[in-house]
Length: 218
Image 1: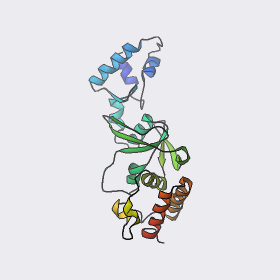
Image 2 (image 1 turned 120 degrees about the horizontal axis):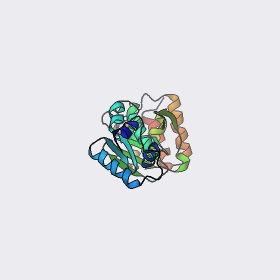
Image 3 (image 1 turned 90 degrees about the vertical axis):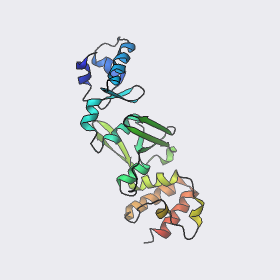
């Protein structure tokens, strides 16, 4: 379990104990010896634990951490059945611009927060009928799914508690939440309306009517 083995892992976005055993070509190798090596590597800072049983070398991190798709890739590794959405995607599109947000995603699994030395990754559950509205691309061989701007806005508003002030004549949701919605294209608005219709949510119907009367009058 020497540095030669560690160097062979430096080109992988992530690895597991099973991957180490395969590289050693020793399926019968005791898990304990692999875990001991991993513990030592983590103690010396050569390996980073992404979550239980999933690791990344410090070398890979140092080489790629500045890449725009690095953090999204880590999110996809943590919960493969998920797509980036909510505040993280809204920020990337410039809909939210005054705060830096952690990585946020949508999953069919239970809502959970995963924190490691690379950051905090929050995944929110949504029902299967609304698990849509995203595109998928690859980075370092890892499929990364990301919501469209319309779906990210829908997810953001759908998962927020309904504010009573929404019914007040002088209230402006976009101003209150600091959402830059003036530049939404017609196709983005139509896509948002489609998600609202699919949701069959009275709350989202109310929000859509409100947005039409405030920021989307034309």
